[in-house]
Length: 571
Image (cartoon, rainbow, N blue to C red):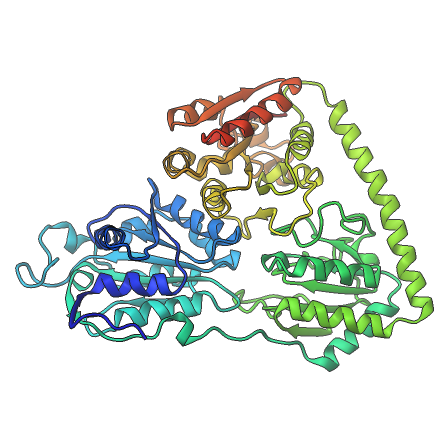
């Protein structure tokens, strides 16, 4: 239990509970209602007390995306402070990503005071405080939250923060929002004891049902064509070797069906994306995935006779109202324990014949992987024209990154090339955003570098999504906070939704004949110049022979302390 003095600032209890709950970083956007964190963190530092690191951000969306990147890269839960409803609204599409990414985040949103002028400290003293009071600020964001609360004068502030962190950090993890009226958070009150997060406690892991595991193991061992659909199990890095062991025990083909959120299995594993279509599988296992395929009866969905099982933390996908994907088994559990139990059960179920069949699939996967990688590399090297072929950029990027590098993928239409040439094997070396909220990458790269300062952090981004992420704001903070990352921007000056999809649904239509107005932005912004304006290093590339040198120099600039941008004009 933490006990303060007889009277204490509310902010002392808020920050104290954050420290006790493992919050190491506060991404801070200034505001008249959150300035208490500036004062309290500075006070604690002046007195040698532990405090979160206050990292200034110039845009709130960068702050929320950075908090997610910080958690993804192993830094633990981070907090974000934003000014009233307007600053919290500035987080925009990052709220969508926070809902889907499964990482713990604490959002501290200021709120206007309601105390009449001249009564409480921090009471209304400007017309804006009447304008900033919606009926209920939290209702705006509640669909994207796991927990929310508005601090009141009668609350125990330390307990409230501990509770927020307890819920945010419990599986499946998510975002917690605490709104803080200025007059309440600036008040002094009784120094109430409160339980910290450790005392409140986090839930213990959930183990799978043994009969269900045995039933699934029997199906997998006997399967003619077992397939595993991955998603985000790699959020828990301990699952990567467990999934690898299961795949090799079963001789199972693995696919991410074009939606890879984490490194769940080595990017070059022989069984990853080398197998038949899902329609050919007789047993399909879905692991930590929201929507594993489009159930349209095509080759990328299981056939009606296949056994389908789901395993992981949310096998109901309960936060999506209508999900029509079938299952013969749904096994809720902490993923690492489910994988370990399933692998052991398959090993115990194998017969000599099923073991030989599994080994034969593994051997075939190795042959297919070697041929696939050789073909992809040859195609990338043969691409010598201009604008630069995206495959050439992805190939050179794959060659550049060392085994410890962290790659963040927001390349959108060029993501298949980026993933095809990624060579990473280390758990926690690949991340993509889990939804469709463009602009995640720049902030996430900043947060990842703060969490893993000794690792190279590289963002691969399409230019449309890159622009959505306020990259100048992220680059400025990266320079000031000593968190330099490399951004590789695929510049094609268009949105695939406004060009390719328009052609798909309106072939030869008016929009196509008019040059896709609204889908093309030509000439595109000079992202290299923007990086230099933000205090970083930038390079614009138009020829394939320049790509490797530019990427290498960009990474060297990050080693020298500068965030770097390599913008490549691609076809």
